Length: 173
Image 1: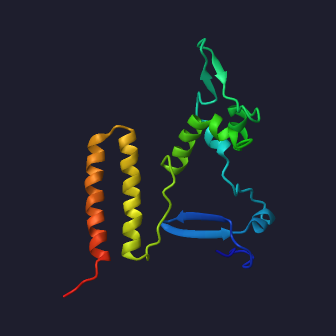
Image 2: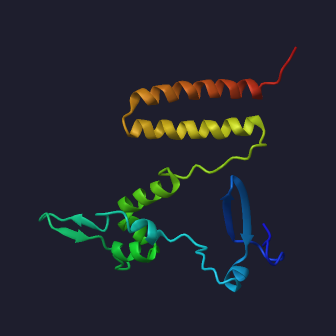
Image 3: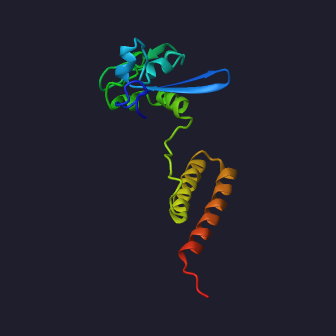
C-alpha cells in the first residue's frame, strides 16, 4: 500500500479507527510518521513477548537450585534473549529449545510451520499437499502414541490416495 500522506512511498504503518460505527483506515510510511511526530514501532520485539513468560530463564539443577539457561557456544543467557529478542548464535536454538518452543507456539499458534497454499492451485496439487500433511500428522501421532488418532489419520490417508489414483487414471468410455 502507498502512504496516504506523501503518496509515493510504501506504507509500513497501518491504522484502523472506528468512529460512530464507521471504519477509517490510514496507511503511513515511516518518514511521514516521523515528520508528523508519531512514534510507532514498526517491528515485533520478542523481548516484549518474553517478559511475561515466568520461569523460562532458569532450569533446575541436580541440587534442586535454579540454574540460568546459557548457550554453551556463545555464552548468551536466556534472560538476555528475553530482554533484546535476539539470539546470539545458531547454538542458542539448541540451548533454549524448550522455552523457544513455547514462544513460537504463542506467536504462531502452532509448534511447526505449515505454510500457505494458493487458492487457485490445481486439485491434484492440492490433494498431494493435503496428503503430505496427513502423513506428517500420522507420523507425529505414532510418535506420541496417540493410536486412535493415528488409525483415523490412516483411514483419511487411504481415502486421499484412492482419490488421487482416480484423478491420475485416464477416463475411458
